[in-house]
Length: 370
Ligand SMILES: [Ca+2]
Ligand SMILES: [Ca+2]
Ligand SMILES: [Ca+2]
Ligand SMILES: [Ca+2]
Image (cartoon, rainbow, N blue to C red):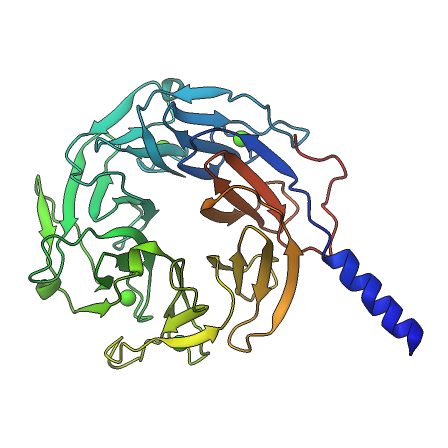
């Protein structure tokens, strides 16, 4: 019994040792970051946005990164950045929004020197998302509530997601693209100063110079009143296991744990009262199949720990100590080091850190990323 206890204590002690990040990029003023292969060698690279511009770090063959960026794309007061193939030529491009507000798309040709600039996005420092919003191969950009489609010849289709009636001052931001009602069409969630707004597809960008996506023209539109939405980290995840994706959020200023708005298959979010998911903890949320086991899990990242939970059982699968000193502003996950499992990328005002998603398994390569 004593030995079992001792072994348990040792295991706990080992699992609670502060995990050293296996990558650290110091970049003062960091506002956003993205991961994707930018030079076609199959190794994911990193783009970081800051007041100086968008810094590109290309991953080297020995799986390390240089301490100083390989490239700096000139964007004044760069806010958020994403990587994807926006013009469909098979090569990843870089899109960035800044404080002014402009959207820049740096195409992956001529060494990213020929950006397409869109100065009509009309939203100060928007968060970016990308995905195939409507059927077809186009990967579209959402800059806050602004929808942009870029054709290979540089043509830009422009649309704006109009807030609900009477909500003209709502700043809809932090878009998430998912098929929420599982009908095979992508839907879009925004957080605003009044709550979460869900635009249900099918969504189609009108091929006009400038157009609007109006709630009343959609198959369904739902507003969930929740004034803390803009200061929340949220994910779309099936919290209660009924097969319908829900909105799971952690409101940074409420200190009342992680809660969710349940989605009902027939009525959407008509019952808009929040339910408790994980009381007593809060942090930045990610929902993905981190260890490629075929099951998505919920990760909660804070300055002190990274905790992973199974849903809907709410069982905690792992916890690792992180000891992040600076305030976290952005988190993402993705397989950067090529070990087949996703890593957690944590962005603070001073740069970027990367942690393994499973504390029990050592990194695939013994050499740490510099
Ligand atoms: Ca690369
Ligand atoms: Ca491209
Ligand atoms: Ca849908
Ligand atoms: Ca559900």
